Amino acid sequence: MSVSIYTASVPVFTQMLGGLQGVLAKAEAHVAAKKLDPNALLQARLYPDMFPLLRQVQVASDFAKGVAARLAGVEPPKLDDTEQTFAELQARIASVLTFIQSLDAAQFADADTREIVTQAGTPKEKRFTGSSYLCNYGLPHFFFHTTTAYAILRHNGVEVGKKDYIGTY
Image (cartoon, rainbow, N blue to C red; front, side):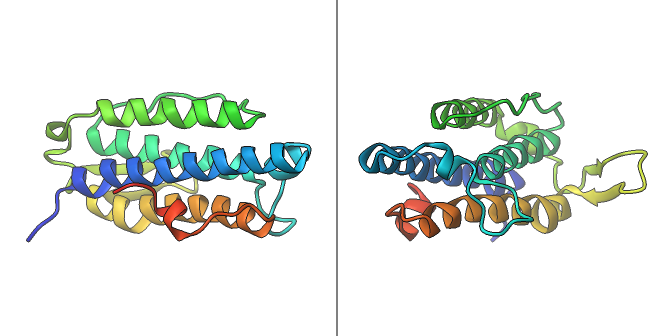
């Protein structure tokens, strides 16, 4: 049985971004219930050299939209990374979900062999086939940032579990 690049990307991003929306909603409720400054969570990190929660969400959503767009052969939408609140992060995720769900499976027809070039023309340039880009680059980075966002919240006392992280499937 083979799995299409579309099936291995858009539905996975959709499910996991839905889980991220859920854990962020629980984080916002946690902040309100405990009468905490929201920035205590939005700026929380697992370690000083890691991105805070806010940036983890931005990067996770960037990978979802960027990977899906490149595999579909379209330009990814530009987001300005100006979010400062839970509501703004939720809006960002919603806009990414709207974008990736607008992509048609037919756009991914030759995605497994399509050449994907990251950071073209720089010393960090990498070339991939679409399948390698998704499996060896895009999904691992996406999962790293969604997992780290979840871990930051869990570490800071937000009552979330694996079911919250996984989302609806």
